[in-house]
Each structure stands twice: as C-alpha cells, then as structure tokens.
Image 1 (spheres, rainbow, N blue to C red):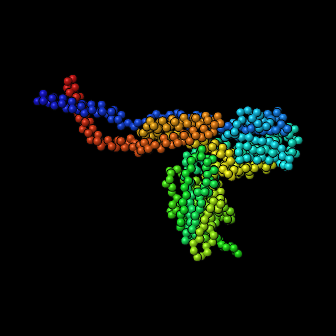
Image 2 (cartoon, helix red, strand yellow; image 1 turned 90 degrees about the horizontal axis):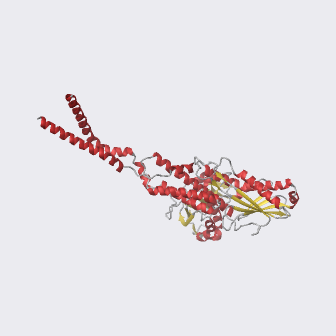
Length: 551
C-alpha cells in the first residue's frame, strides 16, 4: 500500500507541477501577446512647443521710407530710419511675449532701382511709405493705399519746421504714431494667439467670435428663400453675380483656403417665428425683427440648408424674399431700420432681406434679380464673408487714429481685399495654425500619457513627427520673412496633428482599459486556479509533515 500511495502522490505532484509550470511559463507569453502596441512619441519635443521653448516665433516687418532730397538731407533720412525703427520696436514688442516683431526701416531719397538695392516687387511684410509735400493741405495726412504702400503728406507750411530739430522730431513722432495705430491691433492679436496658454478667448473680442476656425476648405451655399410663390415667382442670376462680385475675393484668399460654391432656391420658406408689426401715422406699416429675435430667424426644421457636396464647414448666405404685402425689416438696438436690411450670424453665415414689389392682387408676378440688381446684395454678402474669414477691416482703424492726423484707407472694390488686409490674414492664419497644431499635439501627448493602454501605431508617430517638422519649418520661414512658405507649413502642421489626434485606431481603444481585460479573463482562470492553489497548499503541508517525521 505504501508503494501505491507513494506512486499516486508522485503522480499528483507531477500533474500539479505541470499545471503550475504551464501557468508560470505561459503567463509572460500571455501578458506580452495581449500588450498594447505603443510607438514612442516625441513627448519632450511636444512639451517644448507647448511651453514656447522650441522655436521663438519671429514676424519681421520691413518699411522703406522714400523721402525726397529737397525735404531732408542724407543724415536726416538716416536719423529718421533709426528713430522710427527704435520707436516701432518699442511699441510693438513686449518683454514677456513669446513672439517677437522685429522692424527694419530703410530711408531712400527716391524710389528707383539704383536707390533701393535689391528692391523688387513688394512682398508680404514689406511696405513703402512716401513722404511728400502738399501745397494746400492744412494738417498732416496719411493715406494707406490698396497695395503695400502709403503716402504721408506734409503741408508746405510745415516744411520750414523740418529744418528745426524739434520740427523734424514732430514729423517722426507723427509717423510713428500712425504706423503703430495701423499695426498694433493686429500684432496684439497675433501675440494673444501665439502665447495663450489656456486657449481661452476674450469674450469681448468680437472679431474672433465672428470668424470661423481655420479649415483648408469651405463650402459656400447661396440660398434664395421665397415665402409665397403663389404671389411672386422669384429667380436670380446668382452665377453671374458670383463671378463678378465674389470670385475676385476668393481668388485672392485661395492660398489660405479653397472654396466650393453652390446655390439653391426654396419655396414656401416660412419663418420659425412671427415678426412684430409697426404702425406708422400717415405711412404704410411694416413687420420687423428686433436684434433679440434674430437668433430665431433661421427655420432649421423646415429649411434644407445641409450641404452634401463636401465635408468642409459650410457658410450659408440667405436672400429671403417675404410675401409682397409683408414688408419686412430689421431693427437695430435703437429701434431704427437697418439700411442694408441684413444681419450676420457668427461662424454660420449671413442673411439679407429683399422686399419684392407689391402684389397687384390678380396673378402671380415675376420677380427677377439680374446681376445689377444683386450688386448691393452681393456687396453685403462679401462684407459678411470677410468678417467670417477673419479679414481685418482696416477702414475701422480710422476712428482710433489721433484727431490731429488725417488718416484714410483706400479700399479694393475690384478684388474685395487690399494687399495689407491680405498680409494680415496670412499672418493671422499662419500663427493660428501653428498655435492650434502645438495645442493639438500637446493634448495628444497628455491623452497618451494618461491612458497607458491606448494604441499608438507607427503611422501616428510618423504624423506627429511630420507635424513637428512642419512647425519647425514654418517657424524658420516666418523668421526669414517668407510668409507664403510659412503659411503652407502651418497648414501641413495643423492637418497632420488633427489626423493623428482623431485617428480611429486610437479612439477605438479608449473603451478597453485593463479592467475590461481582467473582467474577461477572470471568469476563466479563477475557477481553475482555486483547486490548483488548494492542491499546491496540500502538497506543501504534506511535504512539511514528511520533513518533520524524518527529523
């Protein structure tokens, strides 16, 4: 019996050892085969961009001052260049800023190829200021052209003072104040965008509240909404109007974003709420909307405004035609009708209301809007589009200029945007894209660090590194004054960073933490492990007793 018992005990031990051997050897293999693959992201480099230590953003500006010889000597021109450069450097830069705005000022007697070495066609960030005398002027005047040039006119009565050091200093101060008034708001916005830490926008910053977030493409939809086709048949020559009034602007900003345009006509377009009625003594009454009612103007439930042409953000521009007898107007905050009878919806689009001719009461009338009729309407749409794209309206700076200077800004009605406004848009979108790309990469790094079981495949690591490389190249191009190249690199950086952040292979693993893995395998291994553990404890006790008997 002892031999049989010993043989059975030995067999039990071998079986138990085999089970535990499989567990001990197989556990590392199981752990390794169920391990989540994680490529090594450049977290340190991402953190350097988050803390603005990777690359110091530099946005240079070059000014060429053309001052004729009869107005100033060579020494005076050099003094003007040095003084103006120091004044602008001081006014545009901040000691605690993460972005630097160097200003280079050159002074020349005349604008000729020999006088300005290496001077070719003006480029982004390179501007010219002509200083001339004006016989009939009574005060200093500054006119900003639609190109990258400006004219500073000095009254002849002021010329005698230029020979006096105090008079020349007054001209320098006037020129510096005007130039600071033109560039300071834009550069302050660039500084805020580049250096913001918490990504919190100022609630009073109406420009940023209206403007859309950057996208490489936008879908523009023009909709003609006819409330009552039984009284008025409406059509429009929107194609010709777009070609004549909108296309020039889109061509100018095509380097920033691409645009796809479509149009539609919808009938029986009922409003989502009823307007109020205003009676006027001796005059016909009309219906109106107050500013607090405008958010409810769009009837999203019945108006089909969704676009299936592209996946890009959609900008909606609506021309609403009320019933002929329902004269509809928009009131301002003071209760007065707006001249344009239009309003802007921030980050969405714009609406223009066009009242048709009154109905004769017999049969439906035909209301056709040709290219000429659409001109004032398209002018409003263009202004709304400029606001939605974040184009700085330089003409609004006139009110902020000192009263002692007559400062005017020329517009560019043929192309819809001046070159100075276009330059500001390029700088704005470049800095915005770089800041958003760095923030997106920082969020990705934080997400990967906080969720250790998230999959990070090699192509995500490649996209992150390419985005960082594009950021570095964009920063270098900015410092060299190559703004168009910097814009292209910033677009690559933001697109690559968002592709990496929203990669579906990463999002899918957000819902499978280690707790889920344990919940799956525990029902399988716990029932098996209990008898194995009990058998192991039993054998250990038996071995201990046997050892005690032997002693």
